[in-house]
Amino acid sequence: MLRSPGTDSQFQTDSVNCFLFIFVTCHAWLFTYYCLLIYNSFLRNNCCAFSALSFTCYLHESLSFIFHSQMQPASILEAFLLSATQTREWTKISFVCCGLQQVRDWYVASFKDLRNFPDIQTIDDEKRFTGLITRVKARHNEVMPTMAMGIQELKEDLGRKVGLNELPEIHDFLDRFYMSRIGIRMLIGQHVALHNTPPNPGYIGLICKNVSPVVVAQNAIDDARSACMRTYGSAPEVHVYGDPNFSFAYVPTHLHQMLFELVKNSLRAVQERFEDATHEPPPIRIVVADGIEDVTIKISDEGGGIPRSGLQKIWTYLYSTAKNPVILGREDHEMPNVMAGYGYGLPISRLYARYFGGDLQVISMEGYGTDAYLHLNRLGNVDEPLA
Image (cartoon, rainbow, N blue to C red; front, side, top):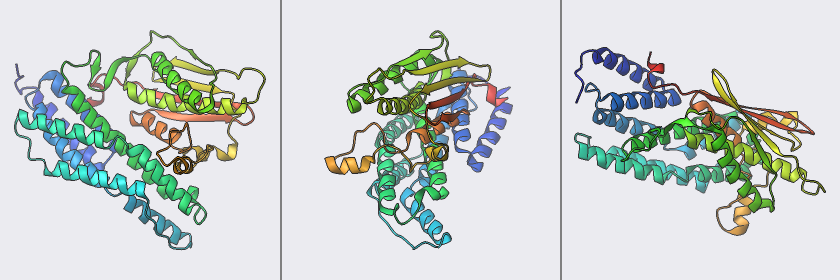
């Protein structure tokens, strides 16, 4: 039974004001997170003031706006480069990167699909809209590797003319672009998951109420070791320390992605350092700590560490110590399937952590190894941030 407005009127007013404020100020991750919280509250409480149908209309308009702002990554990057090169008195340059143009085409197609979709007025309209955004999400599955290829093409083409690692404009743009992409996929994924029948037990959309970081870490380890085995023929051991019964609310796919990247980096460092050793390489250690404010996961390796001068570079999208996968791909005449080389793992993992208020820190001891600290903000119940 639908609830009568009554006490919901103030909730409605406050929600609209906060919703519009976050949207207008363009705090992408906060806007997305707030949308998810409001949406879950509507569906859970069956509130008549804001029905799921009404929120779907907001989602329709919001996605159209976000896709429009993301439509021209190639043009924006070119503008940044031209501005930066002129500022630094370098020669004016021009370029065309197939990967960046392909991503732009995907965003243009998705924007047109969303704008051409009629107003959502009935449940049938909502079902058709859910089908549309499911297809849109699938269309953008390859944005990450395609953008990575495009940026690597750009780096290879201009690296000798322009010091790309000296252009903060590129990295700032890519941070915003990828954070917005995470938000888009979270919004779409949450909407679709909440409409799945039967619902996934223990989940509110994409958010699992009882994620075991030890279990997710073990799954990420298995995937990363398999990748290492395919690349090197062997893989160091990885030991996990923590309570397997401990759980908290989080998005398990995000956690798996971050842990996979961090373990993959450690495996590569240890494997390459001890490749010719006569003894077994030292194991990688993962420690899960249950704090009051954060859940922290530490990944420690003895892979030789990172020079102090290179620590800032690890957060850029144009830096990697592995062989360039674009060159590998051209040699094989196909999209490369390699363990590393794009320089995307750490910066993207940090964005995933920061999306829900966490962070990623790396401390390294050159000549010994590296410790990565993944701080995960506890996602409380849906009512906490609304107070």
